[in-house]
Length: 356
Image (cartoon, rainbow, N blue to C red; front, side, top):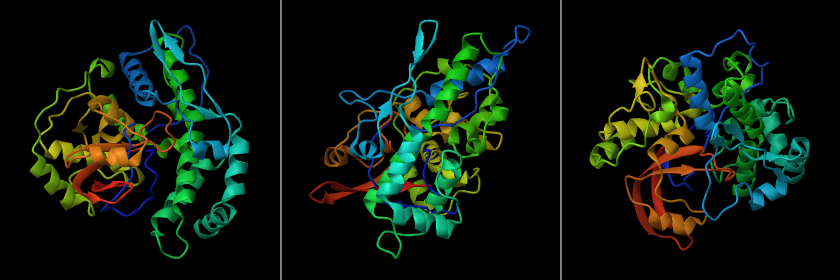
């Protein structure tokens, strides 16, 4: 979604995919608290609201977050204490108990795949310092090696990578949640996002930040818009037309274009702008326009599932679906269902229009 895990120049196509409704995130360094002389401006307060709302995970009924077989292969999980601002509680994302142990476990399970990525993408071995750069290398490699081709990653290896990065980024995301809570609680004047490391440009909440700052209004007071009858035919036509070649009338976000494309499809179907939360202005999209988790939180979801067969039987053409790689309560990818098909035994076939 989440980070949407694909690389620059990644394939844009209509393809079959797994999906579950659920988050995507950003990461920052914690800066020193504000001095007593500093005053939080309305703009900084709104920015803190937007970031904490975007990053905080959701809960799935009947499912404990971050308890999957893939995560178990990588190490144990911690659940950091939530942040409280007045009577409002903002949960944090789960994290690896020992990040270095998780890296060692990943390399121990798929050493040859990691060697191929490092050799072909010219990246240093994975570490706590270069994980964001390594994720870009993984994305680039994965998107240039189609399933069945020489050197392609097998499904388990690909899923293990996606799960690892989904959880590994959460420590940095939690720093942003903590910093935003301090702003909202009057303990800090502003977010120190100028100290963000290289991962700022990796993750899509930052993509809509400047645009959202230019739009007046209270982000958290925006309610989920009422359900409306959208023009499905217009959505389908738009999805097919621009699945491969992005619409030049909109900004293209390279690695993180999935939600931007989904928002364009929804707009083509007749959804009005809901500023300041969801919309396209000044040459870019607001946070909920470009961020998978913010998009799913704003428009809401009707169901989620952890069984692919059950999930696939619920789908209908015109549905927007999300994918949470690590089941950490944070949506990583958004796609648009353009067709459903016959029963394949383990699932019912369906096609999804999506960007990387």
